[in-house]
Length: 390
Ligand SMILES: *Cc1c(COP(=O)(O)O)cnc(C)c1O
Image (cartoon, rainbow, N blue to C red; front, side):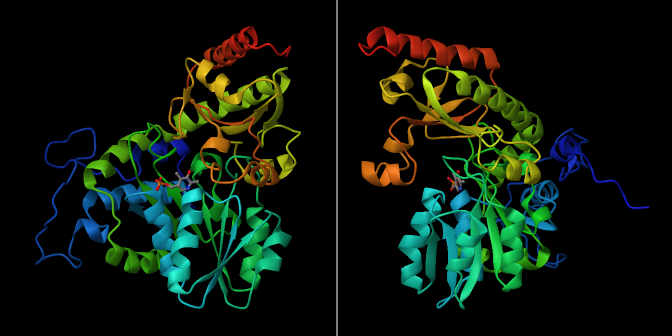
């Protein structure tokens, strides 16, 4: 008989716990040693080797959540991404990525790859055909992000994996936005999954961390590079991340439920002209999102009607925080036009669908009525001040 896999919240709570054999405490002890006895161990334990007890055990939880054989924990999401790319790409190789890529990843590619002689193609779209035309004879890797930031476009994980496999290309995916609660890319043929654990895995806006989950073979290859680059996470923070992840399932499910209700609320609101959320039937890839996600996630974007100044709206909020950070238990909003896409001209922004009226909403765990009321009072406040009849 095959063993039934553990449920989400059981994995979050228990997988990768360290037993406190000495004192029988309820939680994992924290091991801060940077030095371990060497004469009776096969591999020297050392924090930069990703093999201290806290690192090794938390990696088991992350691997279990992503349906992977193995995992590694990093000092940031960018450490995870850069080490992953550098483990598989060499001079003369080529990578295909999306225009909607996280800004830091895009900068890493544009600034560092030319120095290393690694070629790259940014595809305009997110359809399989967009990737197909970008593939060259030296393409080694396709890296995707779904749902994308900030417009929540959905990429077909399975179709991209099938295309890549047929050409011997590896597919890596940034699963930060979906989190393992809402989707498991490895089940759809994605080879390597990475996270900015700064976001949902940490979930309280107080930890900078990253993670990679994959087969043991790929993880070994990444480990070989990572031990040289030195991007591991301090054990104090590893321990904090373990504590945070016990509630990952509970948090993200509550946030997702709120996001669904707020998407519907905003969709009907007269001051809102458009809502981007994969869980709304009007979303062009609603069917695809439904087929490859467990649920639709807790990120959404919306556009205010002309006449309501988006910046004024943000200032009028009293509960929802204007903040660059996302995925914490607290709700936050940002204006992509003055943050992530500020360096583009207005025309360039419009061309990629980022209007000055667009607001990205990272939905938290607050009572949903309070969030709705905050949005309502902010709009009412602006209307009162505004001469425009909205
Ligand atoms: C924040 C983020 C990153 C980078 O992670 P850091 O922990 O800030 O280094 C990568 N990808 C996505 C989608 C992110 O949101």
